[in-house]
Length: 235
Image (cartoon, rainbow, N blue to C red):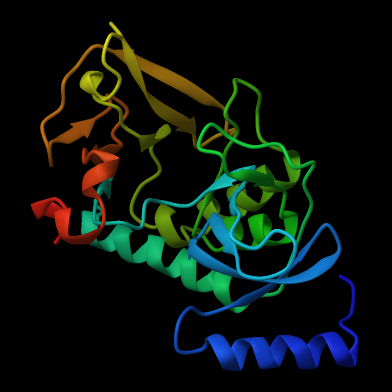
């Protein structure tokens, strides 16, 4: 990791002081440039200053659990316990200094895709995230090695069960009018590959949806996850 010069370090401390009352800033090197960011969860952030100020980032190669509410469960976990795990992933990301690179490509939500290998390994080793690709290809050997260590030692999310697949997202058929089919995303706990659980189901708000391999998620439309319109099961 590049060392900060005294000037950059001083400027960063000033920025932290100025923003302490608003959002906690974390130092991340974005393509080599020291930049303050705000981690809103364990695998995404918003850039707070510099040329990319205001841009949102999705970190590739790993996934932390949803932090908008107690929605995940598997094994003997209670959903509220895995909700704590998701919040710990956010705090863990905020307290470090990380290095990220990007070719500035974006995901379907318009977020810039970044690779942050040191953060990914740290989150996964602690059981605060799991290795993930969005294709049928396995995750990187480095991340899978970190995940095996976490699973073998029952750290974090693996302490009370290891499902064959982690159910990472749900979609109800009415979310996209005119479509006859949608999908939920499943991620292998063994090699990190993704597969689509295709369906034509309409989920009700706060409905618990479980895959046959044991992982469950409570369905809440993305428009009802935050703010005053938050779903009752998230309050």
